[in-house]
Each structure stands twice: as structure tokens, then as C-alpha cells.
Image (cartoon, rainbow, N blue to C red; front, top):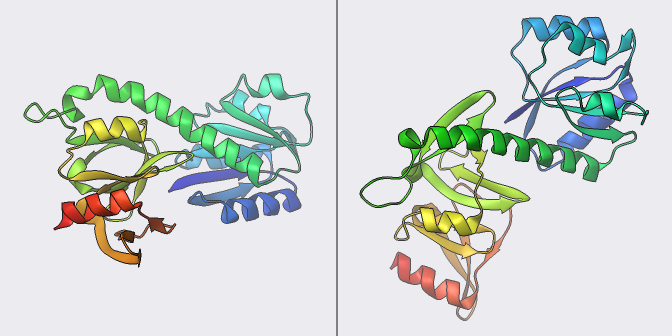
Length: 251
């Protein structure tokens, strides 16, 4: 889950942003809504850094740039403002996007996608340096672990604990316990890294562990729908060819 801090002194604007976040496909936890420079500094000094900050520029007691002058913000920031003249100084901070009010669902989706893309690039570099720890197995050549990020932490997850990989703007893995993490791989690349006796590309958007397959339901002769565990949010209809291949895997 992505933790979000909102720094915005207009209640209508913060309410609108919260509603967009609730309606979005992203799973976020809103930590707090702060309305001033002073309040923001106090909160940041006394709490763990959020994953992402949405920040207005004009606050009740000054410009939000004053926060950066007094505190070293590590979190990426999406600026949400009614003014377009502050874009250059905004990107001299940890700003990753600059949205003009009123924002809409597409604006929000673009900003959060950019956050995940930047996060993947950063952790991919770290992951390359840790390849000896979480890389491929010497015996099979297939990956035994993937390095994923959760907040400010890096977590190795065992390949055997992954239920499936799926593409939704970017690629995610989902564990059997239901947690999802972004990964810096395409599904095509993943097919080469995963043991083919366990993982199968069931359609253009999903590479599934055969142990995640809960049931096949025939929808017409030779065509099946597949149910995954944990549940996938969209119906998965297999092609006739994939239906045949999957039945062979499971039999």
C-alpha cells in the first residue's frame, strides 16, 4: 500500500483529491491532510516519511517551498496548484509532477504512474548491485527471488510465493497472501526468467503460477475462463489455444 500525505489549505481541493484517490485503481493510505508550512514541518519532523506527497504551493502561511528550505524532504512530491509560474522551482525539489487545478482522474493516474516508474528505476539500480543476493539460481538459471520495494524498504520475495504477474500500466507481481508490488520487467522478459514448468503466460496481461489457478470454467466448446487465487479484478477468458495448453499443464 502506498502512503500519501496531502498538504493543501483549501478544503474543497483536498476533498476533491481524496475522492479521486478513492476512485482510482491505486491502493493508497492517506496519512494526514495538512494546511500550513508550520503544520507540515512539525508533522514531517515527527513522523516517518510518506511514500508520496501531494502538495499545494500557496498555503495559509506562505509558499510550500519554505518547507524544503527547513526540512530535507526525501519523498517524491506531486505539486497540485492553481498557478503555472512555479513549475521550474517545483522541479528543483523532489517534485515529479506538476498538476494544475482542477485535476481529474487522468491527471492523478498519470502522476501516480510516474511515481511508480521512478521508484522502479531507482530500486532496479539497487537491485543490480544486490544481484548476488537475490539473483538467479546457479542450478537452473531461473530467478529464485525478486527484489521489491515497500515504502523505504527493499524486500526479497521468493518466486515460489508469487501467484502471478500482471500488467496494469506497469507490471506488478501478486503474492499468494494478496500483496502486490511493482516490478521493473516486461512480461516478455519475465517469461524468460521464470521456470516454465510452473509459470505460464495465460494471456497478454498475465503470467500465472499454475498453483494459483483455482478453476477453469467452460464458456463455449474449447474456450475456458480461468479463476485465480488471489482473485484477479477482471474476467480472464482464455483463447482456444491457451485453454488447451493450460488443461495440459493441469492434467
